[in-house]
Length: 127
Image (tube, rainbow, N blue to C red; front, side, top):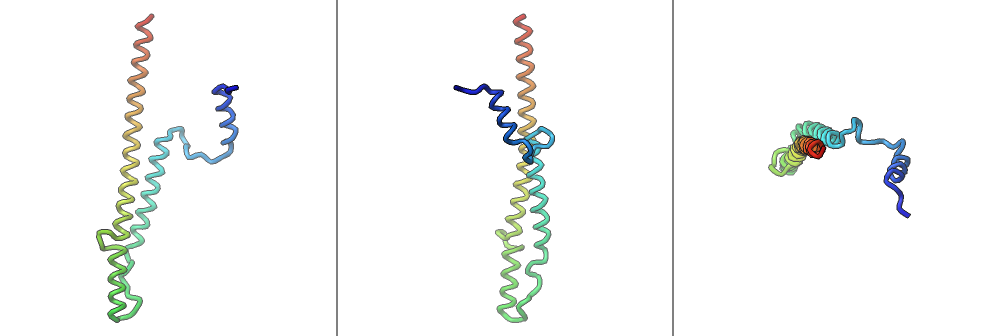
């Protein structure tokens, strides 16, 4: 015997009662966009912390020390495929995702408004 929709919803609400929810203000898409922005900010802080990596030679003034320091600096900061470059791409991607989510949300809202207006017009036309 199939349960009706309201019974299923009520049971679902009971199961999630008391659990932390990502949705604070009722707008799921906006909350997700904010989460991407928070991620971008954390990544930005990580990028700033890389500034001094490989600047000091802790291995001494030897060819190995200089080479290791140069290689560490390149892989962490200077090379086009460095950790810094990867983090910058990650930050940019997170910010772009937040912007795209907001754009999609706007499109959904506009489509809903058009649909609502169309439904209202068709409802009054039949009267």
